[in-house]
Amino acid sequence: MKVDRMIGILSILLQQEKVTAPYLAEKFEVSRRTINRDIEALCIAGIPLVTEQGKNGGISIMEGYKIDRALLTASDMQAILAGLRSLDSVCKTNRYVQLMEKLSVGASDVLAGDQHILIDLSCWSKASLSPKIGQLHDAILSGRMVSFSYFGPNGESQRTIEPYYLVFQWSGWYVWGWCALRQAFRLFKLNRMTGLATGEFFEKRPAEMPDLSPERIFPSCYQVKARIAPEYKWRLVEEYGPESFETQSDGSLLFTSGFTDRTSIVCWVASFGGAAELLEPEEFRKDILEFAEGIREKYC
Image (cartoon, rainbow, N blue to C red; front, top):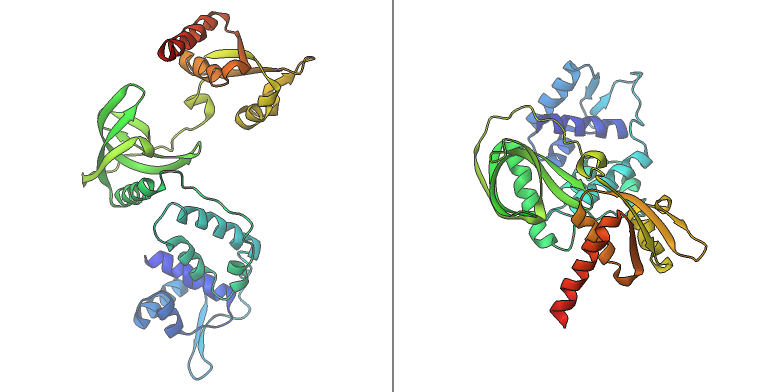
């Protein structure tokens, strides 16, 4: 895109004293005439660029013009690169890092420098996830509807949506869009989608950003209190934080937290085996007993 290219040209000029039009044309894979038009557009936008002819000529920012050539510091660029690499972890191409290489021309120490932050946004199902992300991203950019089979707690359903945002949240990928079936914005988890197909164009409606606050997505309908064996302290710290429990005199952990529904409580307590005892809500203790009896009957 022209705007992206112009930002890239400006970034290069901020990092190098002078560059040539042929160099920029090769870097951005466009004609020299296109670069000349971009330079004119930057001048019109208020950036005073100087073009010098001859052997040592080139394009530069006018001397004395008050512009911070350290617009992005090396640490800034490294932080951006870490984020771009994380996007590449779920894509089949290296287009995000390639973009960074264009923006960091003349600062090779940035690319070769801080490699200590490794972010992988993929998952165990990366082979099937990456094509979905690419297809949904293309559909969002082009304004095309998508349809798919969706598997949720209430069973399988066929959905057609207007996609607006790709979201990485709670260690998973989601798409936020207007659902034709529900006539409302909904969040769909990509790993639960099969048979993804791109459809016809749609006229984009005002799309608010999804409210993904825990209070909205996981409202606390029940307050749980449970006694957990000390060997599972690591799990409580990981899942709910060290403030979620108190160590008792006998070494056991008194856990308290909010849960959204009855089934989640039963399954969570059962996942500890005999290392957890539900104290409150007391009426759910019977549910756990019935859950355990059901498993016992299957293996008797």
